[in-house]
Length: 227
Length: 77
Image 1: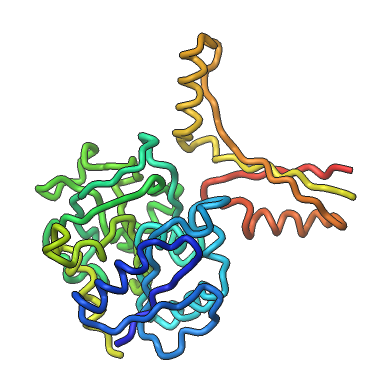
Image 2: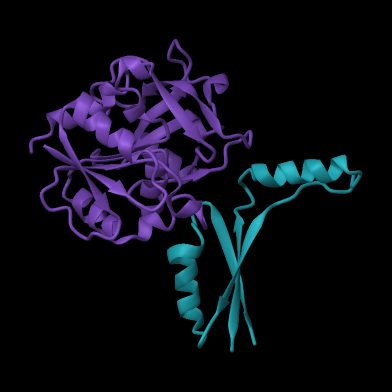
């Protein structure tokens, strides 16, 4: 099992991801630079957070048009696992691999805190292990999930809402909706369930030393992949 | 040399939180007539030639995210 951690100019959670994967999840992981065009030899892709290309034009817009992302789109079409956290989610949404878009937080603030999440569906490789409310950090200014009415109905009907912001008891109440996302959405999966994008950072919650290990419930999915 | 000016704006139905903040600041300065502000982008493209079909393609492929944004453009010169 070998995970590609994609690196773009402006990625800044790449080292966290690599260390989390190697030291805590216990899989092998290597960086792959954005102008590479092959993912040969890799079994999964992790798109880390950051401010790729300075967030120019829109968050994730330029990175999503890079050579490695064209390969990641092909890779995902084979049903292989792809996860993007924070800016990685923005890149996946911009690439069209995931539905919707991420807008400026409702309160205009960059929010850096722990949030509670509940799985919106357990029927995907990424969410099957999330059997309780989990606590994971967020750190973003543009994480307000949006999709039009038809799109929302479609992701609800197809069970594509991977995670919602909830309170500690697991209720998706408005007070728990930290950035004003539609339907409290914190993460979505594609129809096939192999591509996950989420604003929270599971890779920052895989060591007790860093304040929590709930991220393992998501990251552990990678240990179940047949490589 | 022809040029194209592309305007990208958030769809009207979406909350523009940055725009709302600007409107609030204008009101704070005494411009009470301001009801709302929406912030968009202007992208000025210096072109060798202009083919409007290709300009549309540029807008849809990169310059605007049509999930959340509308675009308009004008050809100059």
